[in-house]
Amino acid sequence: QVQLVESGGGLVQAGGSLRLSCGTSGSTSNFNVMAWYRQAPGKQRELVATITSGGILNYSDSAKGRFTISRGNAKNTVYLQMNSLSPEDTAVYYCYGYSVNDRRAYWGQGTQVTVSS
Image (cartoon, rainbow, N blue to C red; front, side, top):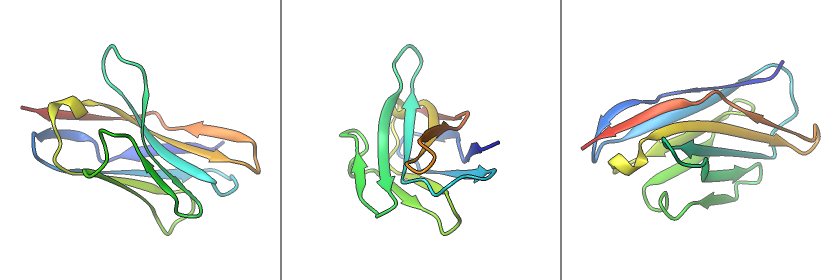
């Protein structure tokens, strides 16, 4: 069974930084796309950043210039470096992976990020 597991969330003061990590367990093909989403209380889940297997990056407007997504050397790992955090970034952050070969998308269970003012 394939599982995506996030780590690195926590409580940080405004202006601080956090680095989220996501690893994959179980047998699966390489993810063609990996991404980070987030969901704040009372809001819909929203895309934060994506990265393709070819290295194409995409960021939401709120993430541009502050967050950096990258893939690790290990298969199906992804990171999100978050700088200049603000209370508006408080949310549960979810890791996402999609495999064209498997025709499946996978989600992690989420990691809480809380930014205090």
